[in-house]
Length: 397
Image (cartoon, rainbow, N blue to C red):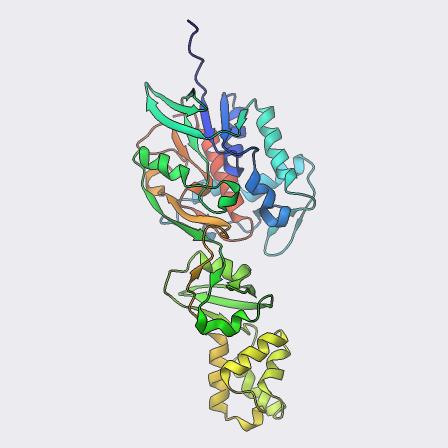
């Protein structure tokens, strides 16, 4: 009778950004690591990110650009593995990159380069990779984690949950990590779609007729504001500004859009003095797309010469254009969400090691944790930082 195979030092579930980073980091420390993914190949979500060029980090990464029930949780990992650290790794692999806007870094070539970088780091560190079969069962006994896959019992001294959340189910995304977390007594903050387009109802049908029109706006929800491009769609509102605010938005609450965030107070009254014969549609059209200017003027019911309007009416129009209310009926859900907000509660994890406080050897990293970044490379940086933190900690406790 043959002896049972030697346990792995760590089994990492999920060969995405966080999982590969963790596996490579642990392997580089001489640990024996097994990396498992139910999909056919690693890094599938990385490949579609950033329009296929992977917005792999953000130079302005800071803890205040992340949402979590504990806003301080991300500080430790982000402070110990920074955007500059990952950028140095990118440059060491000879990958050309560029800064797009707002600190967002992209590959000049393809997102495939980032997947190859991570796969190369894992291979060099001796990480074993198994793809294409789901995990059927997980248990913990005799001081080991038992992972059953394809009828085979695999054992590890540590288990890392890095399977992400349910965003983008067409890539095989599921809530598997939450099921395992609950199995081991960890709390889960209600997952919800984040960085996701809004849907609008019949009251805003006129704006849905603007499908394809984009403009730079400032969008407000509560005290949160983002100034970026917004895009009208046949279903509602999208574009960077809307994706950003969607992570904060709560159902049945309005958002407010400033269509002219660069305008000074009193700008419309001043226009009246300078161009009394100009109509509101023409004035708005000097800054906004013509179709949008037309719809706004129609909604305001002021499409006549400015000189024919009193200052009070113009100031009211200014105020409306600065805080135009929209009442989203919802979002386009996990199918269109770039990430998942919520997830495994940070209250049950060490912010330094990412290990479960009450389950020694169990770690959770990346998107499956209740830490969600802004649009623009922040979620990848959380994946790198949390993966690195766990990879450094495995086997030391």
